[in-house]
Length: 513
Image 1 (cartoon, one colour):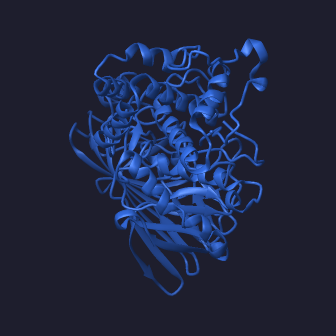
Image 2 (tube, rainbow, N blue to C red):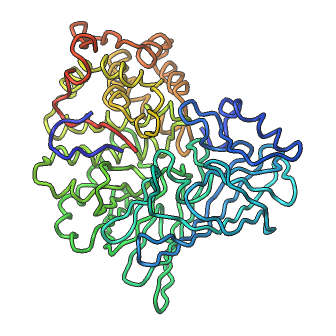
């Protein structure tokens, strides 16, 4: 998701079971909890950047979220979250990520369970210990609070007429309890009850709506697994605009009703953009797509699965050029393949998502807006040493600054990671690179994948060992020489400093939430 600049100036932007490597740091905690009485304590799966996110000992298969909206976006939403999961260890306690709402009740397999808070975890003690391989259904009655607290934001975004969601990186557990890490994807069913006059839309396809005298309950379900950070719910006085996409794909946009005609020139571009992406890398991976345009000042756009979140003013500010706006639209669309369908297994693998989204954004600009890719990559190369010094190399980003988790979304994750893909294309040639891209999204569809997976596949497609190339480009402190362009130079931070480093002249993505 890109951070939206408020001036038209340039800007820099597997599989569901928990993995052994991620569990290594936390499996002993699970065993201790299973061996006897244990205090409630926050756990995690040992992610290098966010070690306390996620929880060991189980794999979520499905979520059912049922929200009730009063019509006031400052009031907590009474919510029931139901989690269907499979235990992967002996579990005497089950930790859920949850930290921003009152919990009223918890049941495990229909039996009331004890629960306590610990850090940003909700620790549940079932009546009976759960064995490996056993199924469990955890039902939590709680409030989902859209209002921020001191130094803590909700995953809800309050709009002019209701609510939307922005859960990246770790805000989903401020909306509903769950396993809030991208390594554990699941199917989602989402139900929203709202006063008549409001429209509720969520990820996936509609299951139907039940209308009563004063309120309507809307229901949606995803057909493909989804990471918690990609959940989206829109509640507002909105219109849903339907149109057909490639091969009959349902395209639906959610817009403020009063802006429907004004926004139509932008909305009607989406089917063509989907067709362009399909020509590059293959069939669109989900059951539907569309734009959610919200009247809110977030400072970013976000690729929530099947329904990307955009600020209204991105499309209404006259100083934003046509090419600039379309590049952002394509960036979020590309994420549906790279990030949503093929999800980074750890947060250190995020370059696979942001680098690819920025790459296809730049490629689209070259083909439709006469912005040469080589020019953009050369300018990015000039800034790349400064980016690496500030944020770390693409596949080993520096940890977030204290109290600013979103600060991992630095320029090197966007322009710097797209530069890696350009170097790879230079190294192995365009035909091999394009085969790699199409194969990558096909074999990892609906799963999670790592940087090592990408390296192995690239070597297989190129029919030679590329480990030295990737070690230098993904983990080096300095930017390696660009294949085919020995004259390119990167300005070292010591020479001019970060704020004086060359910056790309075309729109870049600075940050992602």
